[in-house]
Image (cartoon, rainbow, N blue to C red):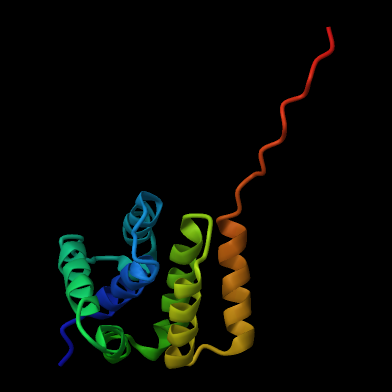
Length: 146
């Protein structure tokens, strides 16, 4: 029996993605909270479990082979029908702070492979995440001649 519910596994996926670059931004935390509050995959989810899952992920990441252990728990708890959903949530988290670091890319690749998300589906999910988190470029202020 898994320590995680399917919803916990989705949260663990997001928390692990956020922690992959060894820092969690406020944008990432806010994105996790918004995702849990708004999306149907989390209907009926006890939001108090967020702290439990986050602590569990951080504790496991501090151990040798912790990443593999987290991935195993995610795979065990997650119904196959939610594999692309988990990958999409991870991609959204990676894109939330505006930059995707190499450590996050490695985690996403590992996650994609273990979840069995095909390359075409992964590319579509990644492009969607990039589009959702695109920022409007700042335009230089127009100079006014006096």
